[in-house]
Length: 388
Length: 154
Image (tube, rainbow over all chains, first blue to last red; front, side):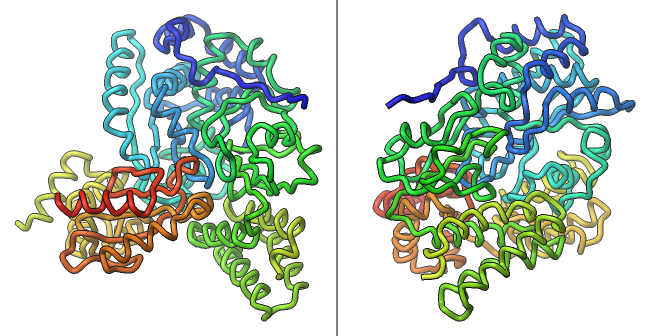
């Protein structure tokens, strides 16, 4: 069968040619505006899931007037089914540091922070050693930029950028109102670029290989490639860098176990796609975007259990600050339990769907706003499994 | 000066006397004492010139900053979907039986606390658990017990 899946090797490539410090030296000889133009031209969008154009983010921060600016690497990878950032941090940390240093040069920041989730503390010892070598190399190159680590302490919501700033400032990880956006007022209320781990590595690699090569991959809406975390009912779970814009059908052909019933694209906060829609679902910003999480379920799995797991997750991880999310997550969980036990009629599921609509409008951050994604896609496609 | 007081002073010295150092200070205490006692929280509040309520409010937000006593070794078994599919229930049951504690409890000798955790980022190698900061992927109930036994000897 024809398969349009294209495996790519950009993120983890570690030949001498793309030695991070060489890329840095080469790039710092260019003007900041040139680098921004290249990034915009490449079409790179944030790889954490939200997909904001990286070049624009850098440009907005550069345009702010402030003595102090920051570059922050969001390594608070917590979305269920996502584990690619851990692998990137472990295997090619210098490429992340380099992306941050380039960003610092472009926007005019002197300090960079990597916010590492507490669950990855075991990586810290090795990373600190590599970081101190890198910081020393920056000084040697006369680059006025230093990078530091900050640890998280087990809160999913701190992956939300403004909650992450709050946490770094020693507060509860509660998301802020937006605007102002981080490019205007982020960490310590100063202009801040905050990028995902993978995004920063792509910025390094685009500076290395030029935007053309990156742009040649993917589709007009989803340029380039992306690292996918593949898990669940697959004979070959793991991390794969693939060209964006593939039909889900091809993905399942490659990674499924022959009995795939559904794929959860984008983690617990993403969408559940049933088999009948594999053919016309595109993985990318024009279809279903993902931070990389691809969880595969075969026909032995109960979608009620899947949804129940997700809702339990959100009910626990909701920061509790805004009512739509705090109460909404609890009510969705209690609601499907009640329908399952027969205490509520099946039509109650439609009331719960309306509740997710309210959450989407009224919740303060992406956590509460996106609970409707898994909820509605599972209810709509596997309603009978929720009821009986 | 109590050992907790000395520890807090040392951590504040190292991380700086600002609000931004609150997380590293609290993390440092948990590293040494496994949880944040009332004494520790009040001491931090005094050193950083914050209200005790503010310090407690921050600490209680984070899963890893425990404000109730925990054992010397904290076992966190991932309970999120893929680990669930790959058999985390059996792993928890095996550890729970061996240590004679339920999830959320601490052994009488204060050596172990058993907890469940949300996604630990090892979905391709589940089930997985953390013991303190160390990670153990691709568990079976048998393997988990052997690892716990090793920690019991330490």
